Length: 236
Image (tube, rainbow, N blue to C red; front, top):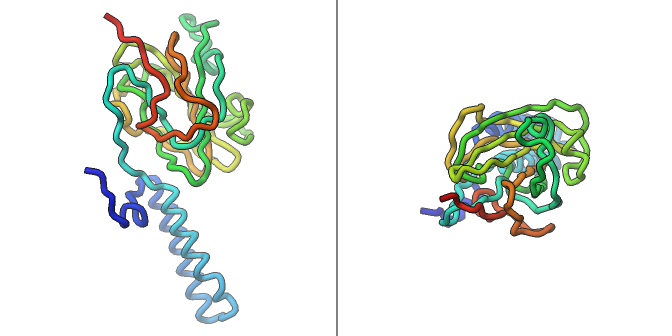
């Protein structure tokens, strides 16, 4: 059952990846409080330090999501806003695979600010066919198209339970410095199941299966594991 209590908003579930960052921020806040005891002129920093520590914990919040019922639905893998929609080829090595060369897919890009939940979820039930990590050294704003070719990123080729193949790309942004994949090739995941996260602002691209057109628009707010991006044509 969904939790509608105030506690769910003030003290939400935290992804394990964020515990160490929150603890470090909390320790630093305590250090500021101790220092302020001996150096009273530092007292004005105590409240902001603890608020910052709370903010770090909140950045790694990991609420439950409730995917809509229906066959062939492709869901948003990320919270945020749609920043780009365009037709293009699969990225990097995925697009170089012989069976996908020259083929076009609709790409929906979701930009995540530092205020969004950064845990990423599977658009469909399916299998990770290929995973490719690209450690590029640039950090353009993730909302820009060139970020998909210049920034650190991790590409996935996924085969859905309906038999379609599509792509997903995690892209580090201007502030983000670390992609944390949590799947390997061959893994089979349920729809809306967690597959990774990106620290501190970033972007997720979904290359919809061939023949599937996006049912969202630029500027629309996305909810990972709940908002429908498009619908596959079921075979058979």
